[in-house]
Structures are given as C-alpha cells and as structure tokens.
Length: 501
Image (cartoon, rainbow, N blue to C red; front, side, top):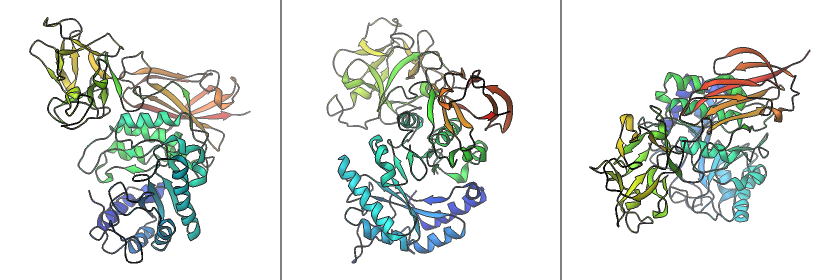
C-alpha cells in the first residue's frame, strides 16, 4: 500500500483507539516512497505529490495533537532503496527540512551507498551532525543491516540495525542470534535494532503466526530493542491486541536501566545461519511451520517452506539439500541460466526428483536429524530413503511416516533458549522460547541464572508476565522450570525479583 496522508491519519486514530499511544507507542513512522525523485530548485526534498499533496508540516502537527511524533525515511546514498531522492551530500539541508516540518524520527537506510566501514560511519556522522545542529530532538535510526555498526552505534545515532530485514520467523530468529554477542553495546540513548515486529499486512498475508509474534515481542522487550510495529493494526486478532498492549512486557522493554538482555541458556535458534537451512527428517508435528510446504508458488516445481519462505535447493548444485531464497525463473542459479536446482517433482515411482540435467537424482533421507542429500535414483519403487509423498497439511513424508523439515530434527530442546535482562528494580526479566517443532521441558537452573550474580540461596518472587499472575517463590539455586513449552515459537516470560529479609 502506497503511503498517503489520509492513511497516516487513519492509522494514528487507530493507535489512539487501541490505547497504543497511552502505552508508550510514541512514533508513527513512514518508510520509502514518501518524497519525489527530484529535489526543488533550492535543493530541498519534495514530499511525494500524490501521497502528500499538503506536505509534511500539517500532518506532523495533526499527529502531535493525538500525542504522536511523526517519523520519516531517507537513505545515506544518492537514492533510496526505492529510487527516491537520497541524502548523500545534502545531510545538513535535509536535517533542516525535517526540523522545520515537525519530523521527530528519521530512519536512514544504506542502499546505493558505500559499504566500506569508515565511509559508512562518516556518512552517518554527517546526518547526525546535521540533526544535532537543528536543536530539535530528532530520533536518529541507522538502518545499517550489519553487526559491525554496534561498537560505534552509540556515537552515531539512537538505534542501529544489526541484521537484515526480518521478513519471516526464520529471519526473526536469525536476528536474535546476531544479538547474542552484542548485548554489551546497547544502553540508554542508543540501542541495537534487530528490525521490525511482524504480523499480517493489509492483505492478510502472515509473516509470523500470532504465537511467533508474541515470542518476538517478548524477545524485543528482553533485548531492549525498539518496538516498531510493521503490520496491519486495523485487523488484529484478539491475541495480537493482547500481545502488543501488555503493559508488563512493554515496561520491561522500556526499563530505564536500559541494559539489553543476553542469552542465558541454549545455542543458535536459526540453524541455517546466513541464508540457508539444511533439510532434515524429523518426527511429524502437525501444523509445524518448518514442516509445512507450498507447491508451485514461485514457479513450476518450486517447493517453498512456510517457516522461512525459502525454496528447496541443491546447495551449489551439489548433493546436500537446503532451503535457500527462491530465485524466480529464469534465474540464473548455479545450474546456469535456469533454476533447475530449485525445481523438484514427485515421480510415479514414489521418488522426489531434482530437475537438474544429467542422470536422475532423487531426494534421499540420511536418517533423523541428518541432512538430506541428492543421490542417484535407485529405480526401485519405495526404495529405502527415497520414498516421498505430499502429506496432510502441506507436509512431505517419507516411507517411515517422518516429515521433511527445514532445520530441526535434532534433540528435543535444540532450538530452545532462555534470555534475561536486569531491570532498574533489581529484578531480572527472563524469557523462555522454543523455536523447535516439538514441545520441550525447559528449565533455567543455577548455572542459567549465574549472570544475575545472585547467590544460590537468594529467594526470588516469580511473576508470569503473560498470565499476569504471581506464581510463588523459588531460589536462584533451584531456578524455575517450564514444562511442555509449545514448539514453533512458544514463549513464557517472567520477572524474578529478589526477596530480602
């Protein structure tokens, strides 16, 4: 949906009606497509004539009357990602434009610009200096995409993107993993930014499930990330309303101590690292998104995973099988000027075959938890490891009734984490998340709580922030268990508050 002043006013009123403004959702921010490609005769930016025929100033004033601050978008390059006027060489002039038009939040992207570290730092510093020179307190958000901004981010702006766009649950988990080593860099006045809070867009397309959205919101609170909603708030479900208006979780995210949380227990949540996820075989979990596949969506013979929106792919045209960003026809890919390494079909003999040229290659199971491979088709119907068929609910099952999975397949709890952050009250907020397919019993024991500095005998009062209930007391030595934490984004969040005397 193209941005327009009418839609902005409608969103602002909806934020008021939902109580979001009173809960601390301070900014209403626009992204790309809001200024013209060219500048005016004086070199100033021109608000998009179609979407904002009355400019930005009156709109900013109207938002201010509702208790909101108006935010806009630019790029440190010569053009924005969408081809509109960029800020390069115009930083001071653009900063003055924002100040006199009532803009109080600026996101500056990194398209069409150098990715050299020192050059990037200098260009962001130019906009920082321009904004500071206005004397107007404009929040400066660096959309930098890289973890290497974190050590210097506080000197350049108020937040800095530490990873790529989180367009799905797989991306959310990848961005969380990036933060595991960056928690020492955020603090009052400047914070790591793992991107946006996802839900459904105006067409109803779902980037994450409601359960995953709650887990993401909990994560963003614990890591002290900016809570920026990127979704259609006009058609929230009851669970979404409950999630994003939970004052107790918001209070954790906005805690004045400002110290980002850290991983207390577990390893990487996104098993594929950057860009790809190995295909494995695991016990079927009905409805699990990493075991749910859509057929012929990107193009003929493409098979897309629901969890990460990626396609089944023969890695570099070799034998290991992964999911990888879909490459629309005609390519090119490693298979040349075509997309055969991302095309698969179910044959009459019960095999699942690659479309790559040469001797027929079949998807072959190597056992539970092991990466699936391409191997020469045996030619025997139902051969061990090469029997596959579309199953119920979008699954793909093998001859033993197990499911093809994007990642997963490891031991129970392999994709479960506990994260925590200290609060100004002396308590810790602690989050349990299960990104695996199956439910797990997850406990944070004395070793998990060691970063708190509490002695094992320290008494703790436990409060459940999603149930809004006091659950009783424990000790730092005993910790706290969460039995049967649901898979595919199940989350539980608590405060552990020391009891003295």
